[in-house]
Length: 116
Image (cartoon, rainbow, N blue to C red; front, top):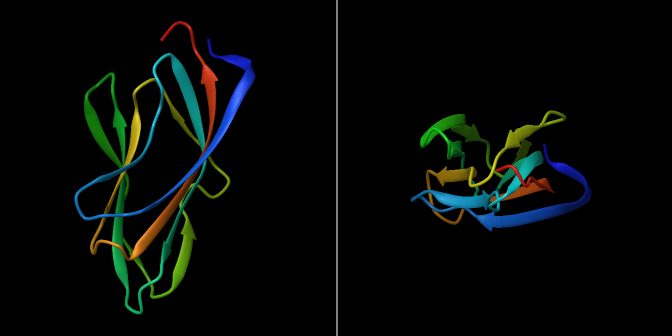
């Protein structure tokens, strides 16, 4: 079971590329809870983005959203009051239709998990 005392709160921002941009990887011997995952399209035209969860135990990728169409100059939070639980070495990977047009922001709570 993860230890709740000493939790670390982390926020990371990236500009998303077309080749699979890793926005976050859970450190070894940790668990994490994604509290916020948002995208901002700064382009004057609609653009698509996909987000995947990589399950390191299963060595498999699962879509959180696939080809989400974002209107020009728009913002969306795909977690929106929910959360995504991750284990050691799991990751969140983003792929944009056009490189450099969509920025992403993720906020996670990390917990040390000596059993992972």
